[in-house]
Image 1 (cartoon, chains in turn red, yellow):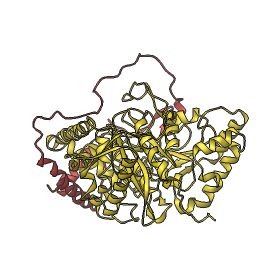
Image 2 (cartoon, rainbow over the protein chains, first blue to last red):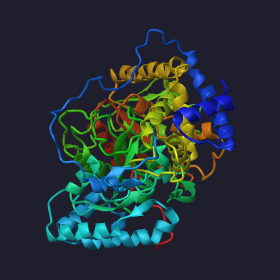
Image 3 (cartoon, each protein chain N blue to C red):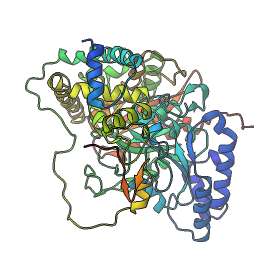
Image 4 (cartoon, rainbow over the protein chains, first blue to last red):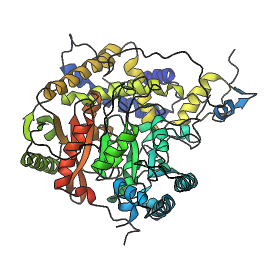
Length: 94
Length: 485
């Protein structure tokens, strides 16, 4: 199964990654190679096999809804490239 | 013998008997790093000042804990409060966590001495540290070769005597493979045994934190410090954890060892096959029952792993949007460009490829053919192991198909590069504990043998590894680096 440049462009939008033309070509080739290898799985009949999402039994883990100390706001904001007045700042959205 | 050549057990005795102070030990290690780091390139961030401060605190107020005063390093995807944690990515080049990963807190509670953060493949995606945004780590046994990966910095630092032990993470072999390439003992515990709170996620259903040490007893000591239930990790197993150092005797009489034929052919080098078969023969002489078995679905583990790991990585890495932390494109004037450009600049090629591929296998048209299919195959692989473990205690294979490869050896040949994980990936897919133990040298390069156990049977793995260590002292060999006399 080979991926086209157009398909890679669509995936780049879904993945929110801007790609150069060179990258599109590179990734189209690499992804096609990997898909070709992954097609090996089609040799197996898995009709009645239950998919294994997790090794451990899939249980929800709950805890008491208690207030616990959180890291200081300034420390958290210090990791953001742009912050203002105690908030993360982003370009205008609406 | 130099301090930097010693095991944790040896160093701990020196400290307890007051023959060396933690500050002296730390200075000796810092000097060692100064001497060899230029050749090895294991560190992304050194924490000299913090280390000397921790050592001073310990000397002033010594505690009696097995890892107290012992210098160690952490893979740079393990969050450390106040110490930059980069995942070897430009994306997180300036990221300073506001909290400690559970395992980092465990070692701090032991009053260990943190020497720094170690190199890795970017976001732990790779098997050679060549995808690190900062540097490629060299193998201390041959500087032209890679140390393996993704925990390559962790393994190289231990092998070069820059730290006494290190923690790594293992998604498809990332502890065992570099440990094998560098002649060390590496343990990936059972999925759920060690908390991953604060370990930056790659593939959540496969990732596990583990240990790289110089010998088996050290491995048990460090596992003791980090294993156990953590309510902050939803996948943490709520079980009683034994003392992994207790009753380690190396007595393996009657132990039932299986070796799967699929791991000893095709992709595995003849010399490697011979090396591990010799070890199997020695286990037999020590009183183990050794038999060949089949794990017929082994060959499907790698393609299924590609799909599952990329799918999970693409979702895990969605959080890097340039807003709350991480690199941000400051030029973008709308939110879509901010996301797309920040990620374009912040991520390297391997990470981009995996995100794109993950998005593909999760998209509506290919979900069933690829992602669902891979999860079904994962069950077949898991059941393969379960079946063998009905009649056996331990499975033994080579850890890697070959010894360490050259830098750039697989440039432009991604599928061949990925194939280095072929013998380790199935263990993650089944959530089992796996360990790599030095089993000799091939043309001067270390070879590793992989021990695979039943879930939460780490103790049996350690004891089986110790039995071999008692017969062969490969683990005592040290590479010769520039600074050595």
